[in-house]
Length: 339
Picture 1 (cartoon, one colour):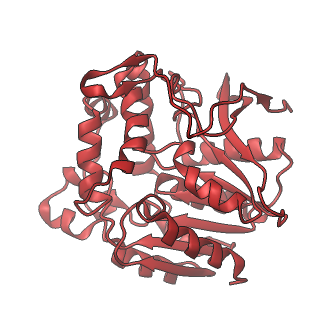
Picture 2 (picture 1 turned 30 degrees about the vertical axis):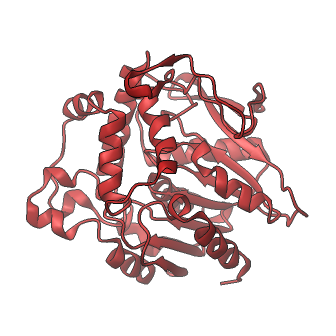
Picture 3 (picture 1 turned 60 degrees about the horizontal axis):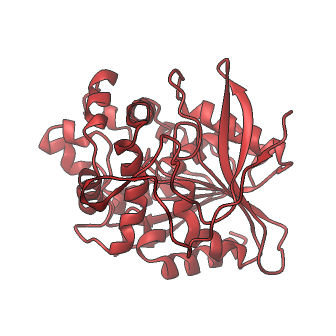
């Protein structure tokens, strides 16, 4: 098996970022693999073959900055986020003795953007397993946010003996949107919609559904990562992969399999979250009952055999971004608990 190849180290987060070109309204643009945006820690690349093509999965592998506790956590990003979005969480975990591996999935951020690829949660889970096998990581804690939580569920279902604990942060996929009445969107239509994506449209969506109408300046950073790729020279393939992964999320529910999970689960839920992919295509009546994380959290923890719910009544889709100190204190305490 090919070993990971070390790429050039990148600048620390505090250093200024130099962008290759600048979009309108002072929003930077990036290449299709986030060229021009520096991650806060050195990055590595895992080269492997999947679906008859050579691909590169970029990741960060951080050693503990305090006394090692012998545990490794793998971080899985959401659809509108990147591995770098986990930076405050990485710092909190490494300071508590954890080794942390943060991955950019194929089709996202600094990893390969294949023109032709069948995106499935099972395939992304298999890619992640291959990466961890190459690093000799056997039974990590797997932690996923948003789409990463949905992927983490699939990963744990496929690899029950290779996960010590599953941590889910406002995962999507806790309801089956199509079964609830959301119409399917043809892939060509989804692609056309993705091509219209801008910094402002992402911000408007996230302000409404992620943050209950509020917005802080620090939320701009993950929006800028994504919007910069859409607006850059590789925007077409970025939009195509985003359309494909939207289709993957919509057509591959995991909620019906929650009772089959055989690993301990920590479920962190910001209860102000109203995320429901595709809901805008549904009737007002259907929209009103979707994305109710204040209800979904309790329903989900009852469906999983070994699960514990940690709820944040005043937070939304990204509690680790919205209130990092509150979230990380709860996370570290829960990880230290045997249950």
